[in-house]
Length: 255
Image 1 (cartoon, helix red, strand yellow):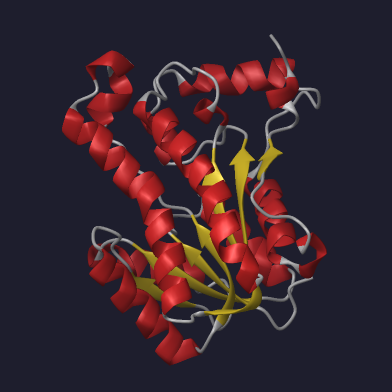
Image 2 (image 1 turned 120 degrees about the horizontal axis):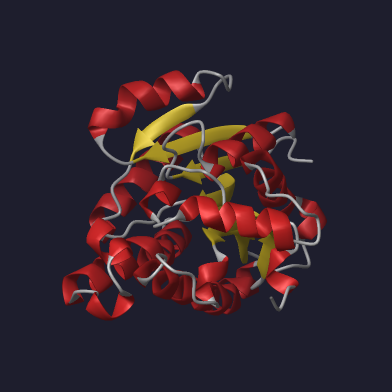
């Protein structure tokens, strides 16, 4: 499905992450896979992880400033040429803003969560377009969660950031559509990732999904990754500006 395509997975952390599930799916479907990670101190463990995918490369990429994003993407283009798809798997909120009630979110915490989790996607799309990193009919995908539209205890400011991310997907799809570039997001069901550990009583969320979702089970990183591969592929060439749920159907339930 992705034969002869080159994809960039931005924000790889470890083997439990959705980004890794997406990377494995993309590789199994024929893609050449590139990665970015945050923090030079993480290079050794990231390179050890991605060694499981032949011919993959990893680049340190901070999203703190536009200049840092541009330098990273320009290096990727210089060393690999243009690419066909990007997965944005980058999000962060301060621990205290997830543990405390949302009403107590600090101004700095609110700004931080939205900057890293939502604005970084806007910046990456803009800069990738400006430097002509993307091939014709490219696909850009981000990752979101049901807490963007419903109140989930402990998700707090991250829910606000994901709501901003989802709105950004729609506006970016409109802006980039004339160039044939598609922009979508996958709303994954809850998965035991490193990020999920910051959410209070996360285990109870998994139990509720298993009990209430139409499929009566939780999802895996590979299953979500397969949806990303579909959105990367030409099979989804008529889909843009959408939030695609991969959550065993939990989002349709009223109780």
